[in-house]
View (tube, helix red, strand yellow):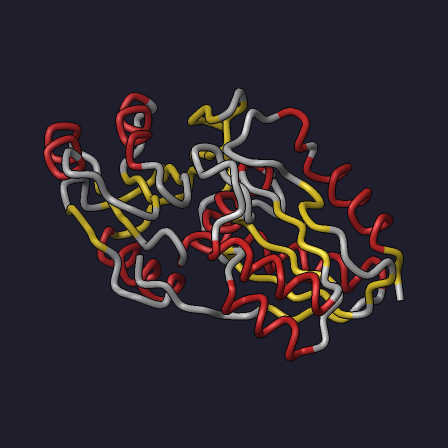
Amino acid sequence: MTHRDEIIAYLDGLLEPEAFQDYGPNGLQVPGAEHVELVVTGVSAHRELFEAARDAGAQMVLCHHGIFWRGQPLHVTPQMKGRLKLLFDADMSLAAYHLPLDAHPEVGNNALILEALGFGDRRPFAEHGGRPIGFVGSGPGLAKRELFDRCRELFGQDPLVFDEGPDTVRTLAVVSGGASKDLTEAIAAGADAFITGEPSEHAMADAREGAIHFIAGGHYATETFGVRALGELLEERFGVKHRFVEIRNPI
């Protein structure tokens, strides 16, 4: 077993959450058991994930989207009460890292997506919360149909594709989640293709006019990589057990 605070201190040091102006608090959001034997990771902090973690016997839940978000009610709603009760009754801690996990150059969602698709030589772009969180990666050249197929396999679902770029993709920009607004910056950066999670209404016209491929792989599907990598790091570093819980979301 490892002390909860030792795990949180390691994650805080790795991800540097204090450098970001985020949509909610990063780090330990709900304290639970002091000693951790099993960490369950998942994308979003909600009841179904907490139930799965409780049933697995976890002492800590680690996720990308935490339980507290800017703009939500400042009182405890019935929905929030139900989520908190699950954590309290099972004595489980909840930790979450949002923008810091998108931005990390090794275990972040965007870097891992580029690595999986074969694009190296990354440079940061797309500022969110005071820091760039996306990356533009370069490669020797990949046929556009091959890129679309690889995205389908990587994200586990058919991506929404606006096929408006060149036949060969040599420069690929990635910002996971809900970042379609960064398409304009990807065009300015000279990218041949841009991957994010969700589309916006203007994305089709922007892609067509900017001669770039727009690929929306799914908000959930593009954000499974970082939190899973964090769980694997904790398993390797501290000897705790790790289990990623897959709760598919088509969005």
